[in-house]
Length: 430
Ligand code: ATP
Ligand code: MG
Image (cartoon, rainbow, N blue to C red; front, side, top):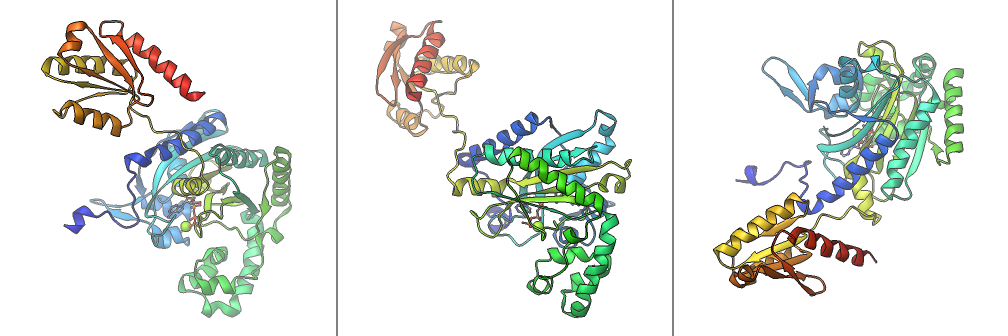
């Protein structure tokens, strides 16, 4: 039975009483993205495994350890571990780069990574992400960082630090890789087996390894930022000027290398200390080589992704406000068959006008019906019986104040209810 009644570790349900938190984050993120001129894109949940191996990089933890790969009838597919690869694939396949540039898209989707489940680290998690293709200018980097920053501000989050770094381009990285290999060579045998094989192929990945030994050995490793070529250096300097001018605070963290291979030049993270060890709420950067690597015309691009679970956890910790769940506007109780039918028709008319209205579908007595109306926190209630039907009017009760108003059950009902409801809303806002 346990297999049926217990959800898989690392996966989460969102119960109805929590869903408004998700709606808050999703609507704020989409709003801000649209203000910045981004359009929503929706992509498939799984793709050919090769897409992720090629774009995320075969020496990354994501590809080597964290992918969920499923067997189709003939080939292997992988549940997306992140949103960029699939989004860029879709941008290319649908010819979006032939439209006006820069091409700007955003997405809200689930991702899958086989990691050790813990607070803020799940097998299935959700990202809000955005990608911009076509601009090589640091202005685009400033634009992306500013947008992520706006989402964080609009959610009401405090004390989120922005860390930025530059990890150069293939041109200046060659020299740096040489220095890194020299640095690690004397301790080569002590590195974890994964990093031993990374030393030749992609030594910068060692700096992102989670193993304590590799972290210790890499502590004083040379930093990419000290080896930037003139172009990368200038790009980074100009970005800093934009951020200064826009009043966006940041610190330079030469240790950020990011967990995905496609990054070049600017990389950044937004970090909070409110939720413990898994404090990176957003990660992003420039990936000028990715589109060409995926078979498109060489096109500079960049993006970021935020973890929605971590954002919500931080909002809860910091007491940020969420949009309120929608409550019931009116409950129409009834006694007897004829009154039940009248209640059903009034409720239908109210719903058609956009009210959340409810009536008894349980066959309960009036007392139990009112108990239910209380439980669901209905703003108003009304009870219909033979008397009310005969007289064509009933008492509309304000459930909070207890105040009762007589209301006609004829065609004026909706308008009259609307007036009373609006007056009550205005009064409670004062
Ligand atoms: P971390 O260093 O925490 O593993 P990452 O560098 O692997 O993060 P990215 O690939 O940059 O993460 O993904 C962007 C964001 O998605 C992260 O900043 C984080 O908020 C969220 N995220 C990543 N992996 C998970 C996960 N397993 N569970 C929940 N959220 C995650
Ligand atoms: Mg990770």
